[in-house]
Amino acid sequence: MDPFELIDVSLTSSRAKRFVANIGPRFEGELVPGKSLSITELLGGWTYKITSDESKDGEVEHIFLNGDQCFKYSSDPIEGWKQWYKYWREVLRCEFYTVKFDLSCPGFRDLVDWLKGQQEDFDIMTIQSSEECDDDLKYVLRAFPNVPKLEISVSRYKKDFKIEFAEKMSQLLIGNAKFIDIEQFLRLKAQKIVFGEHCLTNEDINRFVRGWMSMETHVGLRTLMLRMENRDRFNGMLTGIPFEQITDVEILKACEHRLPGDDMFRITRCDGKRCLVYVLAGSYLCMDVC
Image (cartoon, rainbow, N blue to C red):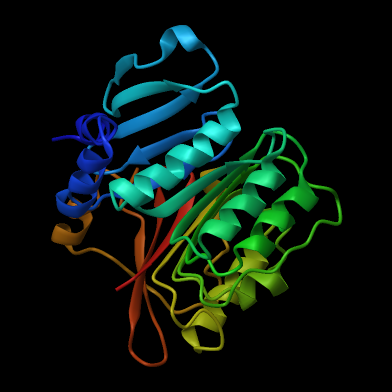
């Protein structure tokens, strides 16, 4: 039975609720406390979406490639979302490892505070906003400071905006990372780093590569992706750095869907570990540690 069917059965009686809770499967879910107010079971793509439109109560929509979405009416959607969160945890024994915050949603801080009271940590967190929201972004990260995988999709910051990230972070994806200068960049310890807009110059990147080669920085790095305005920016990044151009046909063939040409290089660290450096799709400088 899918989650929708299990929930429907559990609502028929207290005995049925206990039955589903005792024998029903465990699920992993995703929370979106904000405008969408959805709780999603990740494996099958089943989503409950809270609505204030009573005529849509119980309506199920199939979302192409994203599974099914069931609407549940609540006169107070925020409170309705909270109740369904608790019900999924109690009856479906659903563990929520992923959360997405929309900072432009009114009252989101109350949701952050409430959610913090329900569970201390998440494995994956996405924070998004189309508006300037420096203090709100810091508020979320103070509430959940040790998220291993973090994605930030915020387009605008104040000129002097700064924020530090947890040392144990394994993945950091930022659409607009212009607030991170070279000194902070060199302090990052994430295994995977992906920046869209950023302020790093060719000289900064050259300094980073040298630091990686000497094991002075980013020792645990596995993947780096930095957006470039154009392919010409690649010139000069490796100035003075010993590298080997990849000519192995098998390696180039395996990467041909990503490379606009044959520009792929191998750099060796002082301990013998190697990485491949190339331009992805003509717009991202990529560094994959082997």
